[in-house]
Amino acid sequence: MYHQAVFDEPIITERKGRRTIKLPLEDRNFNVDIPKEFRRSEIGIGDREEFTVVRHYVRLSEMNYGVDTGFYPLGSCTMKYNPKIAEEIASLAGFRMIHPLQDPADVQGALKLLYELGGALKKITGMDEITLQPLAGADGEFTGLSIVRAYFECMGELDRRREVVVPDSAHGSNPASSTMAGFDVVEIPSQEDGTVDLDAFKAAVTDRTAAFMITNPNTLGIFDDKILEMASYAHSKGALLYYDGANLNGIMTKTTPAKMGFDIVHLNLHKTFSTPHGGGGPGSGPIAVVEKLRDFLPYPLITYDGKYRMDYIPPKTIGKVASFNGNFLVMVRAWAYIKMMGEDGLRDACETAVANSNYMSRKMSEFMPVPGKVLKKHEFVASATGTNMPKAGEIAKHLIDNGIHAPTIYFPLIVREALMIEPTESATKEEMDSFIQKVREAINTPISVLEQEPKNLKVGKIDDVDASKNPRPSLRMARKLKASQ
Ligand SMILES: Cc1ncc(COP(=O)(O)O)c(C=O)c1O
Image (tube, rainbow, N blue to C red):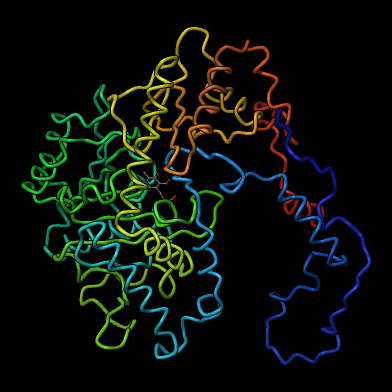
């Protein structure tokens, strides 16, 4: 029986204590010229003994759930095991303590790492050049579409090419990034089997199309085998092809976006290459491009001529998209992961992730609908629809109440009551079986019982109506409101 660790204690900023270490800051005469409005008289952590603070945060961490505590089948997030060796390497002082403004001669090792990572990712995608700068997948999308824009501006076609064609199975960031980059989004429907409707695609792609943007395998975990036909059709209309590489775990080493005919790819290092997605931590969304788009990449690019340099400015660059060279330590983890795995290891990870996903989808299709083609890649979507079926949210809460992280729910939007499941290569058979058994159990549990869950967690059932009608301010907000009264 699962019970979450529960500690009922006030948060640390609200507790009084005894200060054991007094820093003599008050006595120092700092000669810093910080404008008054930016100064704080207190930092809001109060006077607490070190051990009280440490114990408080360790207790809080015991109430948490992460890739190190259990199975984490969050669809679209590739929550794979994060090898501790990658963390160790990223925490080496030689990486952690350097500064981007240091003389390149002093940080040759770090630049070499970035150069090698770029080279590995070019090989994995089949592309000709890469920038590591974007800070997340969506930032990569925005960067890639800004390159599309700059390319057509340079070709004198931007006035006409105002549209980006996106399937309705796309991640929400695809239409959002297209809009932010100044394009109109043309959505095309998927067929029953989860792949793009080719007739709708051909009707949508015209000489107004700047780019066709697609994730393959898509958010249903389905590989669209019409991709070569779609790529050559889009190219015949003069459009570019954008590959959302967030799902690369399902194809890496098996094929490349270049072989599928793509011109621009973004990768989510914080999914496929070690740093687990989720939790709002730092990300990295490199953009790799074909030769004709090289000159438009953000600057600076890292080059090597006997020494590693970070000062090459592509002649038609779209500018910078992040400070310095992006989230460096995520790149260190990705580099360590790729080095450790090698090509064979990456192939093994991909094949195991796909085998796990197919194992689970076949088993789950025995008792609930799993739409789209039977053969999946790295993830699949089950639909909590049918007679007496609980809602996706109720199944998710039953899982959480039994110590299993819920899958992504209510996404993608094209599947009703969606449970989007991505076991990754890190799941064991026991974990997958116990997940399946708990979903089956939820389906066989009376709704009146499910409605009471979760019961074994610190936070019980939330009154959704009350929460949306009477939103409570966050603690910080509440303090500000109090102070302003
Ligand atoms: C298919 C797909 N594309 C794009 C993104 C956006 O990536 P990020 O969250 O790093 O911005 C995600 C994120 O989950 C995704 O699943």
